[in-house]
Each structure stands twice: as structure tokens, then as C-alpha cells.
Length: 105
Length: 122
Image (tube, rainbow over all chains, first blue to last red; front, side):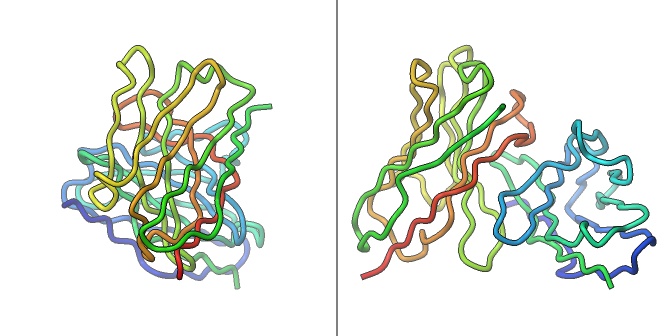
């Protein structure tokens, strides 16, 4: 079955750029979606179809997907961005990555 | 306001059954694919299954871990989604979220409920 690999944790200083990767075999041929989940809350869609942003999501959030890696980029990181981030694709069924905890230093 | 509200969670013994509900409001429920996603305590997200819309014959898909034990259904007249869970196992313990699909086979889940906790324990 298809596997998505995310780093367990990423740390970044406020105002800097965070990059969270999602690795999968030829993931560039699939559509990747990204979710943000804060403690005790439901996930929120932040990027869909690789790089589209839902209304209400800041322009600081962007996505890319090529080859074997998809990347969620958060520019000018703020304390409020601290959360778990999950990537998701479809491959006969819906697959989620293991999640990445973003820590803002 | 677009909203999904789950209910029906609780404590159940291994081997037991439970039915979760998800009430939708603020959008045309009948147009959308609807999914269930769960999250075990301290763990990541796991897709449970989906029901397509009427235009796609209400067909369903399930994760291998629940196939044959869980059944997803919907009642468009009541704007409601259901998850019937039978033969429950301790590993089914999780928060269960209903989520709205954006109507493609490889779509994202753009609206989520707040979740309902299911605990399977003796």
C-alpha cells in the first residue's frame, strides 16, 4: 500500500520560513492536500490540489509537489502556526502522512 | 454557517456496536461526498471510509481495517451521515470526525466536524 512519509517534527523561529515535506513514490503524479490541526481541535484544510489555498487561509501558506516530494511552506511563521500538519493523497483509498509537529521557537 | 456536528460516541465493550451520526447544515448536503476519518489518542489521522452522492449512486468505500465491520450510510432528506460500527475492537478507540469531500475522487476534506470520542474497552 502507498505510504506517505513526513518528518515527525520541524522547528522554526518566528518570522522565518518553515518547510514540511511529504515523501511518497512518484507523489508528483498525485494530488496532495494539507491539513493543520491544533491541540484539541479538528483538522483544517490549508492547501488542496498541491498548491491551492482555501478562502481564509493566509497567503503565507503555499504548497508544491514534484517527483517524490510534496512540500508545505509557511512563510513569516507566527506563534499561532504551531500545530500538527498532515499531508493526504488518494491511492484507491485516502492516505494520510504520519504528521509533522511544527514548533515555533 | 457551514457546519458538521457528530454525535453518538461513548464507551462500548469489545465486540459491541455503536452508531455515529453527523448532522450537516449550511450547504447542499446531497451534492457532496462525505467521509469519516478517525484519530486514535495521540496518533495521526486515519481515513475510515466514504459515501458518494446520489449522482454517483451513493457508493461506498472503506479502509481495509474496518471493511466488513463498519457501514456508512446517509439520509439526504435529513442532511445526515451515519457510521454503523459493529464487532468493535480496542484498536477502534478514537475520535471520529465526519468530513465533507469536495466532489472529486481525489478530493480534499474542506469541512470537518468537531469529532466524537469512541472508547472500546471492557
